[in-house]
Length: 270
Image (cartoon, rainbow, N blue to C red; front, side):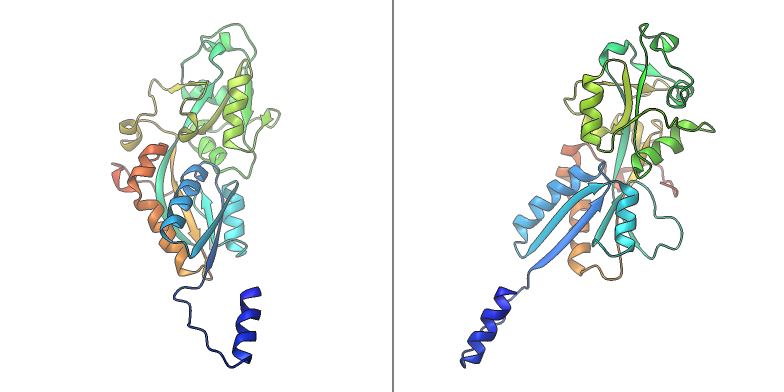
């Protein structure tokens, strides 16, 4: 607004101003906290290369990202899950992320079956000794309904069982890792990217760890594509930034994500 007033004043005095080569563009992205580290770091490096573009990035959860993109409250909605139905959004798959089941190290457990994991989060298994650990209460930490991480976990791990709503709930991936690391007996699930150097035990699922090869071949079950959704009113710079996120192999690998093209399997509902 100040620039517009100044320009009008100069023109009124008979002066002329050269047209700016590029007008400033402000992009907004919100949603998945599993995707947040990649989007935040990519936004920083993208802005260094494109100083005319400013990018504001926030979390809130996958379903929040989808809803805000649909309502055009943000230019980009970040999500771990597809936008079902007639959303009117354009889907850009930018990466693949694995989700780790994590436990406080004092549990005494390093591996669980899918049936055991389902039983824990359904509230049917309540003591670590019942799954090969120490005699201590299990403290499940769940994610809110707005979480794409919860949606992926439910789809891949819970089967016909429902997640118990009586467990503790944390809405941020970073907070989940900190809480599990400091709470005896606790267990939760979080994007693998958040577990680097974290004081938690990454649980093998059905004897399989979340290595890159196991994720690419589908041997490790808890993974999803990471989506960045745009709407009809999103500026073209939004897609330019999204392409940058998806093609920045160095950042993807550093933060623990996989390239979509590297997958040896394909899923339509993730």
